[in-house]
Every structure is written in C-alpha cells, then in structure tokens.
Image 1 (cartoon, rainbow, N blue to C red):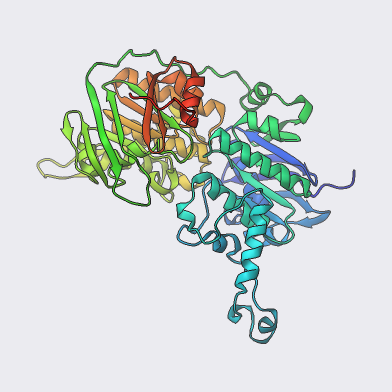
Image 2 (cartoon, rainbow, N blue to C red; image 1 turned 60 degrees about the vertical axis):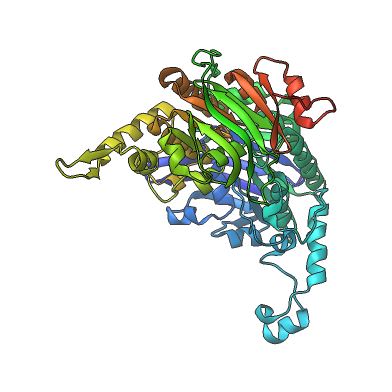
Length: 529
C-alpha cells in the first residue's frame, strides 16, 4: 500500500493550561477523501492550524509530536512553509479580494511573469504574462468542473461560486498534495453542495488528498473514504466508508444522545402584526431585490428560506439599516426610515447577521466585552450610575457575571469570560453572538443562519435558547436559514423566497416537498401570500 502522504503522530497542543489536542494520530493517503468531525471545541481547528502552519500555533508555544509529508519530517512554521510542502487550506470564512477579478484572485501571489526578465532584474520587476495567467486560472476552475468569466469581480459572485474560486486558487498551485477544506458547504444550498462534492471527487481522481471537515454528517457519509472523530482533543474512533452512519458518528462526537429543540406552535403568536414590509427593494444596483412584501405577527416564529442567492436573508439587512431601501417598513406600528439602525433598535429589533466575523463580532475583544457591548451602548445595561451625575461607568463585574451565565447556558468552550473571541472555534464564536442577542432582550430578533458550522449538540442548544426567548419573554423570531428541517421543527410559518421576493408563505406543518418545489421554481408554484 506504500506510505501515507501525510502522517501525524502523537500530536498534542495546549493553550495555557487548556489541552486542545491530546496525542492525536492521523494518516492520510493519496487519492483519499478523509472526513474529520467533532463537536465545536473538540480540537479540529487546532489540528488544521498545525497542519496549515497558522501563526497562532507558534505564538502560543508550538506543539509536540511528529508530522511527516511524503515520508519526510516536516513542521510547517508558517502558511508559506505549508504551501511549499504541498499543503493548501480553504477556511470557512472567505479570504478573497472582492474588488478584484476572478482571474486575479485565482493567481494572486504566484503570477507567471517573463522568465528572461526575471533573471535580469528579478521577478518583482518582471511584467506579468496576462494570457498565460488567464489560461492557468481557467484550467484551475475547469479541474473542478466550473467555468466563470475571468474578468468578473468576485464581489458579484454568489456564495457557492466564491467557494469554488477559493478552492481553485489552492488547486492551481504547483505541487498540491493535501487540500484542507473547513466547512466548505456550510453556506451552500443542498443543490450547490452536490456540485461541490462532484468537484471534490474530480480532485480525488488526480491523487490529491482531501481533508474534509463538516458538521453535515450526511455529506461526510456520502463523500468520504474514511472518517476520524475527535472529542475533547482525542481521536475516539475511525471508520471506513462501508461502516459509516450519521447516527453512529453523532454518538461518537458527543458521547450521548441529543434531545432536539421543538417549538409548541402558535403558543405566543397573536393576531397583531408586529413587522410589516411592503414592496421593500434595495436602492443598490449590485444587490438584486424584486420587492419584498411580508407580515410577521407579534410573538410568531417566522422562518425565511430559499435557494442560495435568492435573497431570504435580505429582510434583516433592510430592517436594521444595513442596505438602503425603497418601499415601506412598519415595526410595532412605527414607520421606519431607510438606513436607520437606531430607529429599529429603539423599537426593540436586533439582528444576528449570517456573516458573524464581518458584522457580528469584535475578534480582538473578550467574550465578556462582545456579549455586553450592544446592551451597554443601546440599553445602558451593565453600567453603574454615579448619582447625581448624568452618566455612569461600565460595570465589568456585572458583565462578567452575565457572560459566565451565558457560557454555562450555551456550553461555550473557553477558558473564561476574558478570553479573546478570535481564539474560539467558529461554533463557539456563534454562541457568543447568540449570547449578545439574549443580553438585548429584543422584542424582535432576526437571525441569519443561526446554526451554520455547528455540531449537532451545539445546534440544538442554540435553537432551544432561541425558542426559550420566544416562550418566556415573547420575542418575535425571524429565522433565515437554508436548513429546512430545522425551520419545519421550530417555526409557525415559513416564507419561501425566489428571485428576491416572497413567492409563498406556508404553515410549517405543510408538505416540505411543496416548499422545495416553490424554491426551485417549478411551473405553477408562484403563489400569492
């Protein structure tokens, strides 16, 4: 059988006194798609960072154990060293240059220049060979079964095509041995995810090793040749393709069964309309929106869904002033002005965006600061009054106590409330965002993709807390998600979007096949609502 392309032996890593990895062994073979699964905080991100030479590993004392690449001892001390050893990685958050073209993103950092002038004056001063770079960029995407306009700006691409550009950039590098993919389908519809998996099978045929990290266990089972399960920094099991089963993997990941969140429908919903949108469309030409009309009742749990790129997350951006709009929005009987986040906040609305790191988190601040920030600035919570003075001072003790309460309630894996958010795994960062919303005690909460990138246990924990907000303090919930199964379980009604507008509103217990038909645009399924 030969030797593995990548071999990790007895890998251990500590952050302070917290042990993130404990004697992990992992071997990866040529032409293999190897799944890596585990709960949030299980050590997956740390293992990937070690393989990819992420600077946070060296900055925090390095790691112990041995890594061999093609039989040779290796220890990537930087991302550049990892690339030189044939290791490429695509992170869950995009690392693209949105204002640059597809071609320039695919070739950035290793453009082909004139070899003669390279020798004379150096590559830095040599003209780039435009035709050759265009050809190589096209070939990289073609290897994934994708064809794009090389001159299109990346910001104009839908999410799933941006992901293909990310992967194409790694595939286009010479000598790629291992491609690490961290939640590559987390932002995709099921249809787009199938295209992604077909592309990965193409790469497998070329002998490239793919380390596939995902919380979508059905995808892991259908795609991978082998799967390694991490729990609490240790390998707890490894499975070959014939014995793969989503339930078995889930049990290995969490060590116990999961009780799924369930909403008792219409328990808090009234007949009073709390949010009304009438023909709301974007004023920005680059954002497609045909005009959204939607009514949400007070106390309702409303789901919004659709295929990727069809605008089901846009109502939140309109409501909270993120995108200038035309039309009419009324919130709790009050007409809102376009682009005014303060008006929405005063009326009790709050939003958790789907792009957490770009819009939802202060990565270099602590967990406590992130949770308390919005409530402190908008509700004057976590502030001690200095009577009779008209101002107060931040009460860090109160903020820390609340943060500790949220850490326990949400199961945030961390060293404590003062740990920086950038050091947390993606799923635990998401929980910090949820805790920030709970601190606001909003009348209406808009949540974009609340469980994206989370393990099964964390998903249910977050969903239960959202439903608890609705049940105990009457928060009206709007959940925009591509996870239809979750919406059917939790929501009173589900609005299906297509081409930037609501095409039908279903009661959640109606036939999900009908919802899918409306999403996909089958003839005869554009109905009034």
